[in-house]
Image (cartoon, rainbow, N blue to C red; front, side, top):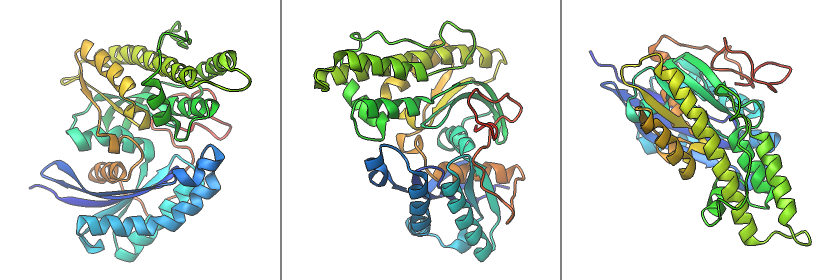
Length: 363
């Protein structure tokens, strides 16, 4: 007997308010509707996300996003199987807004509630888009996180490496700010790098001289700052200098991620998976230079390379709905005691990464 499940997903962990409807039928997932309301213009004057403003915007937009997702999908609340919502990790005000919205919908419509780890949403996206079988290697690389995971099940993740300081996305954002480029920094730096000379600046490749899969990007950002100061004239940066700096920085990040991916693949392949696959997700995976470098490493290792469509790489609610479906099918349920969690590591058995904070591991 085939099972058909239709989930509403809600995502509000950072600065994107999102709602989506996802259905699974005959074992295959389908995104019926996905709505994302960004906050880039709201935070642009501040050079980064302001948590209080983000939380307020989520509270204002969530119901509209949900209504629009249901309308686009052509279904009513009564047609839903359950409601899935990001319960962490993330900015606590935004996560709380989403959780409370989901609770209200679930209670009012008499639907089951499923809390989802935002990182699990990213990590399970390749199963929605490509039907990827467990186990597979996942590089989750985004604005707030960077880690290698061996994904063995909907709630079974083994972390084998990660960043000990800044995430690549955070480094891109800080680089953009240093070079007076608009936010979000990733697309801005990538666009500048396309017309830059990748060989002009010799930036470091941090931690490549150290065994293992851990990464560091804070020092790379500092090296860029010094290089920028070295070419500025009367406090001004010429356009070509900016492009060359971006090209060199992007190349350094790509080289680090590629080499660490090679090492992570070796550890993963030691387990002799039947159908080896290397997947990448998160906003930074939308960078085509980085994506190409990762694919080259994966193919060389004899592993399939999976990268979801760009719209599903950045924060979205379709991945949350799908992760909710996966958890629901495995027996996962929540009730009105579901709480918002600013920190929620996928692999609770792994030691916290350096700099995770006094309150525990973030991810």
